[in-house]
Image 1 (cartoon, rainbow, N blue to C red):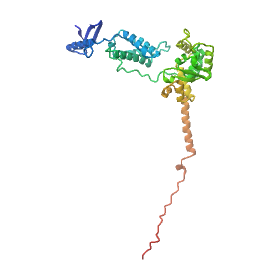
Image 2: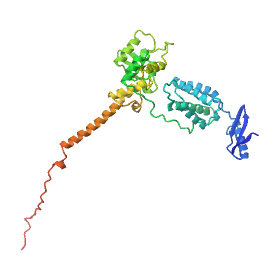
Image 3: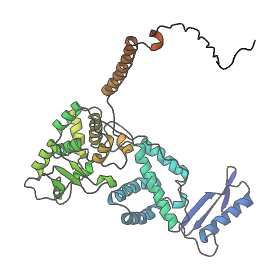
Image 4: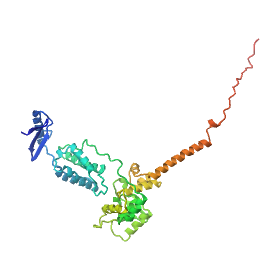
Length: 385
């Protein structure tokens, strides 16, 4: 018999097109469980209209290939690569599952398990950030949305699942001493790349893809033709240090990119992560930082130097000033100076009150004489005796 009792609820199991279907009927009554089994079989064979056979959903392993082909056509290269990496992660947890077998409970377990995983190449034992987990959930959500549009009757298991709070993001500002130690131990081309980020606030990938044709030494500017936002397309002024670095690298160089890939000179460099981690380790910097944090450092230093937010947003390629404000991290010294300024303002106000007391306290109160009532006499009126 295909219906059996497990605890207080009846379950059913049967074979359908090579698949073993084993699910809870949700009923404690055997007759109701048999009816639930019949409805499940009917749903697998027909659509809701009852005239067209329903296409059973495939396994996640198979459908991910279809999703990635669609993503490659619809998304930018970096976005597609992100989805591809996330799909590898999803297969570790949901591999071998049919689309309609993945439940919201499984997604919750996935969230918890990913938060406990350590970051790759992490030396401090830190775990994955909520943002990393959310990106994988986004990919899973897109996979099921695409499956529904293609006619597969699989309920999206991410519906009702809350994404993790990402907060303000992990941001780090290095000190001047850390910068000197880091650059002293950084190898090339990491040293030049890091100095350009610190001096211009460019994103690392913008520096990696910097082209020789977009550099103007006459105007001392760098033109960035593309980026993650519309405002990323911008012209960036050079500082003296950046000017000298680019002069040295571009002079006599016939390559398209300033920082070429060591294996393929016709392509830009892809990453300097290993060199960066080694430089941080050699410099003895206890609090590890990412290469992107050099951009955060630029934003904070520029704001502390008095650069207004509108100009800083244009320099960093932000569409909104609110995004630029995320890069402002006043140091403890500046916070203490702000407190001292407030105390000085308060002391100055008290001093002014002591030197120039209020009018009510200094003016002598002179008693007012009673006002004499004047008697108006009309000469035209005579007294009749």
